[in-house]
Length: 360
Image (cartoon, rainbow, N blue to C red; front, top):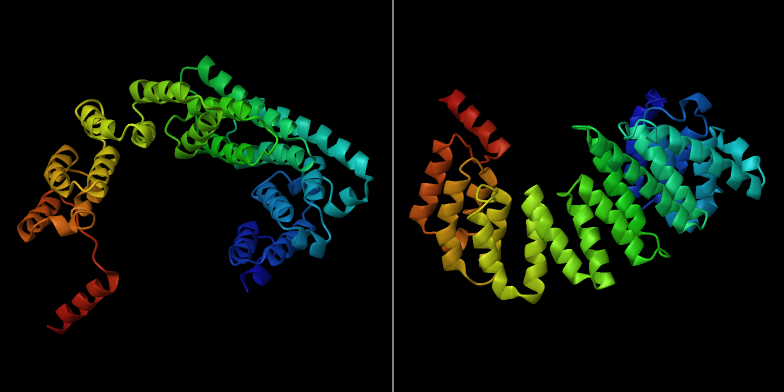
């Protein structure tokens, strides 16, 4: 109904296609994208959310051979049309070799233009660089895909070091994490090269869980455990990254379980004493380790250290529910009220109370 009324509203089309995709119908999602993108004017190919829809369509076609055959469209054709700013129909008419060369030359210019400012500060620029890398992957060049991602990362990093405070925006983070996912999907890339790429990303965003996970995975596969420990320790000491500390604790727990408790105490007594994330992880670790009495004792320390954290307070009614006395739970509720933190109340319960109050 909404699509019928708003033929040119791209977000509605994208939402409808995503709904179909999430419900297992890749072919329907592809048809929805094609019905819109086939009519998009060349001048609009680089604006709004259009590039993202081209990339999403190409990704769906690449994952589903069945969908690609049913809609009679290949993923490289979709990305080639985006790069050259030709309609899907016009680009599809080009010969196979010529299409590939045209798209590659166009994407080179697109990437140069997107990186000319030293950063990726728009959604469109992020998507276009990722589309260029995806095209290389689809064209059988994993090395080329990694090269584009690495070029962008190094450009951003160089710009960051040359200025006093470059804008590492949400778009930059989005690129770093989405490019990391793409690099993880490159089957023929040596683990060592992937590791160096993830390390670049961590220089920009040391607290990104996705980049940390990808980096740790690569280091494990390389067998570079000592280097991994050194990197994580540096991130913890220099960046004060709670995420890096959790990664370090997970790593220690796999081989040196006895050190985990000591490490938690050491860092909570130091620079991470007011990190509710680390306190919550510590309490969960103690409960899972069967040390519920200690968890109960440290819960009070945690609430005292981070009195503003609603999540931490609520851990007393969730994680530690079976281990706290009724008196302690009442004290927890009073502590929450004293800090001006309201515990969640069901919406319908509140409405019912209002009706009762009116009747009275």
